[in-house]
Image (cartoon, rainbow over all chains, first blue to last red):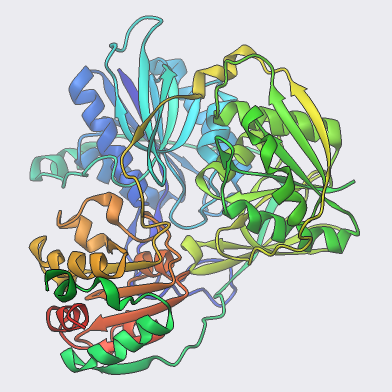
Length: 271
Length: 319
């Protein structure tokens, strides 16, 4: 089976995200780069699907040339091929990004054959547009469901009845979709447990030939003006006390909030 | 012209986040001098007209899908219904809640209509174009964005605005629509459901007790579970905890886990990295329990206890 995973290079912030002086991007000075946890799990899923059903996995990213790093990370855990659409910026709007990625996928499929499954992260870690995968899937005429936390392929991958069973988490359980392949899913962290690269994987990733392409996709209707830090709710932290001695103050707080009832304490039940 | 709210529901049960979409739509409608209308999709949604009216809907459009191939939800089907009603009603804007379903349906509709879609907005200012503020990084940063579109399609970030019943007891005019959809939309509809938990969940519990790296082990969560039981709440955790395999991912509070909004969040041994904070910050009150008074979680919390959670939690539990 042929599986595509789409990922986005993003800075890896710590306890605070700083913005550049011109307000146009996150200040990534001294920051490493990574991808969304959703996408890390998506890569792992692609590797697992190919391990189970045979075939080939392919990672696709769009952005700056340095996203080569994310392609090689993917290869280090077992992804077979990589394409980087180098547009010189991480700042393309969702419509433009989707359009460029659709073109890139068409080009890959024209050479290597169609993908049975396309995997996207539920949303990117940074801009969080919640739409690129859906737009790509629509443009390519494939069913897509977002927020997927589990998959199952029971009926095989060949023939007209090849179905990807996809489970989506809700407040109370799972919704189950049966998507005819070829199809697309947006996955959430937790769908898999991403492996760490082995030394052999790391060495292999250095030899990966990343196919670098360009795009002339037209801008969409959404333009970023600038980034701001939202006003922090400046709340002076009220220290209720230290150690076990703070318990009465905590219980007072619980009572104030209506979260404490005397009646159901364990001692009374046991008495 | 009107601002159209796509109302989210599950088999006729309203998603509370939809009420925030009404509040957001009213702020847009006021600027445009237009009414707010509601779109209910699916035969089982008919009973929600009254709550739509109470939250400011002037007219309610109830769209049923012809035939029964779509069941009670499918992202492509619902997106096509929104696109179809948009063509019929020509609204000035379309608003939904920034939930999994809300964002998914609007993205599908926007793709069908070949229009922009701006997810998770917190405010809108309308001149010639729409100037939006939306969240990035799960709410850690705001983006000022300009939207050029003949039909703006936006979702409102969950918990960004307060729902308000503005016209209690009001009634809205209800218009019935039967929408014919192409057969292919049935390829992505719910086929089955698995019920995993009855009762309280992270998203609905009045109190959540979260544990972080400071809990130290899977067994360490026992004290959190005991207190959660005592308070009628549920246990959550940080990403460090799921990465260590101490709790299942379904317990994770954060940007890539569950966004919570309980009355009280008790964060135990959690440093407060951005990934976690953005999932917890909608809690009405936050109490941090941590040995480090300089921990990010302690600094940002409303209340804090400085100390070892293994001493503090049992002391609370025993009253």
